[in-house]
Amino acid sequence: MRKVAIIGAGAAGIMCSIHAVSDDNQVVLFDKNSMAGKKILVTGNGRCNYWNSNQDLSHYHSSTPELLSNIITSRVQKEVLDFFDSLGVVPNIRDGYYYPYSNQASSIRDLLVQEARKRGVVFSFDTEISDVYKENERFVVVTKDGREYFDDLVIATGSKASPKTGSTGDGYLFAEKFGHPIVPVCPALVQVITEGNFLKYWAGVRASCLVSLYTNNKFIKQEFGEIQLTDYGVSGICVFNLSRYISNNLKEDNKLVLNFLPFLKDKSEEEIFSWFSVRASSLGESSFVEFLEGILPYKLLLVILKRAGISPKNSWNDLSNERRQKLISMILEFPLGVLGTKDFSSSQVCSGGVALTEVSSQLESKKISHLYFAGEVLDVDGDCGGYNLGFSFMSGILVGKTIRGDFYD
Image (cartoon, rainbow, N blue to C red; front, side, top):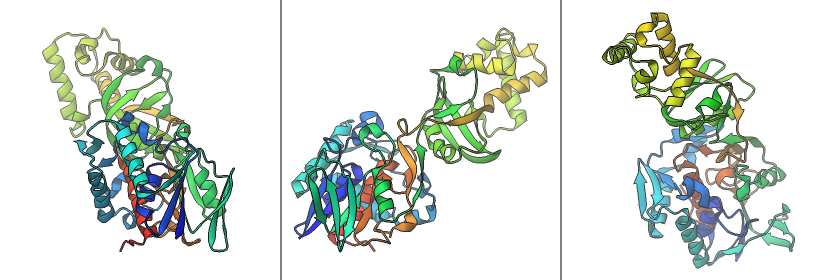
């Protein structure tokens, strides 16, 4: 009987163990925590957004994006959905986001653990791996209890994100011991820190916004969604999806541009000016607070007016065309200089990791046979919306079935 060691009992590790175990394979799943799937429990604000119906590869990122299609295939995507269906998970789908109908992340975690135990996976909790290496044709896993020998080794330790859940980057060190270079690891899906002595005045505001990122004055990417304005900068899903580009280019000149009226984004300058003028004429001599409070949160409105150098007591008719254009610009193109991002303790995932050029399409090491990587330890990160858990599940299935002998074409 072959012995398989999987380091990391998170989403990728548990899924891998379920699909690797068989009458011919004994699987031991190691984790430094006292329970499995600790990070699963906090995903989706405790509701577990475990999948997304839109699996376009543009939602996944890597330093070698051309290799993603070799891993994220329609076949493995179907296997994920079929597997959860076999567990009895009924999805509650909202705008393509999959949640368990219970709205409890513990439902997903508990079903995965139960299935793993049912299939015969051995869990080894509260187990710190102090060393791993290959001796002759077998892998040696060293713990406080001594050395154990295995025929296959899977590193599924997660990234450095959310270290309170046990993700401290051990897998990168293990990968380097086996000769694998690590693509620089940076926080992703994380809050952005910006310049501005006005930030405390808009803290707590939420608004629909179109957010554009520029690096060295070059447009990088645009995201739409609800933005959260804070005393340190900005947050929200649309910001999270841009944060990886910022953390990967901290030495560059990064800038965010916020459009607080995104429904005007496709209008010409004349149409936009006309829209404001028509609204102003219908409101007569209303002050700017009355003029704009129906479309912008009050605290945000005051910041915009101050940045535009306009008194809240003024009306549209009090301003010259130049001042009107300045106001419109502040509403539709509010500039924010970027200082950086929050650190790993605040990030949901990381960019970077074990390079995809170092592994086969089955995620087996090209340097060391029977050594595999799964989940966040790889140089793959996804957008908000179930993509990172989805990749963990896909990579776990891919590695598990490969070890069991169910090879993918």
